[in-house]
Image (cartoon, rainbow, N blue to C red; front, side, top):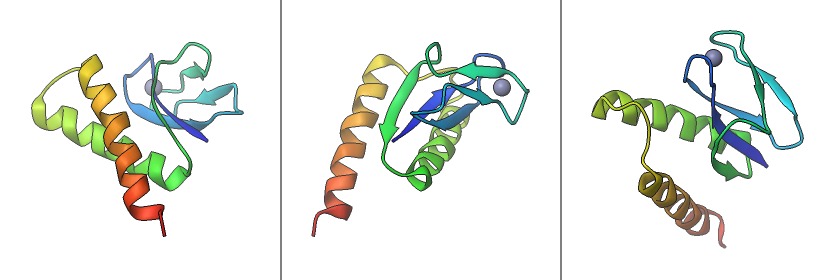
Length: 90
Ligand SMILES: [Zn+2]
């Protein structure tokens, strides 16, 4: 599993393996703790995490907002679950 998180230092989205306890932010060098970072969504594959990170950055840039609302995070999780079902169910 991979956790899509946000760096508390520079606010850029990132992802980390759920077994990892720390991640060094590639942008600002902050040490991100998986215990303290807020998790936006958990996914199975790093490729999916990478895609979501890019989409979230793009979305906030487009809407010129600082963060997602709780509703948007809930909807992201629901949509993602549906997407996985649609693409991975034989
Ligand atoms: Zn950072």
